[in-house]
Length: 103
View 1 (tube, rainbow, N blue to C red):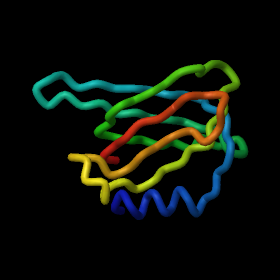
View 2: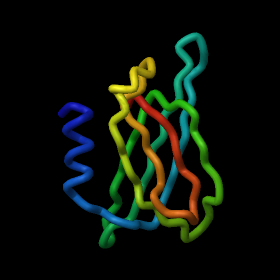
View 3: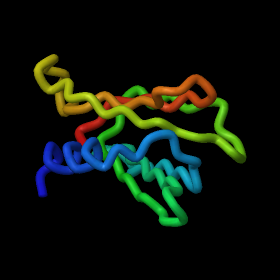
View 4: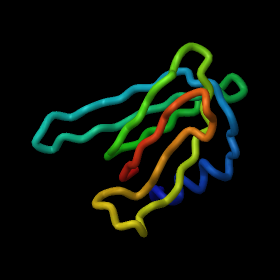
């Protein structure tokens, strides 16, 4: 499944504002040096796992027990930023989670 198809599947699921169960940021060492993020959200007693790779400009603040997330994923490939295809951000104000990614 392509990245665009996965984004469409996520959008069609209309998950809404969900509690965060886990958030993991991973780094690989240079020279390849990349960053990825895995996010686990709770929906009706089920874990929804989302993984993003090739992160740039990661901003994360105000996360704590009980934090919720309304994740927005917007395509930005037309902006021609090298290796960047999406802008991802939390649509609510109680948590800062924002980054660009290749997927």
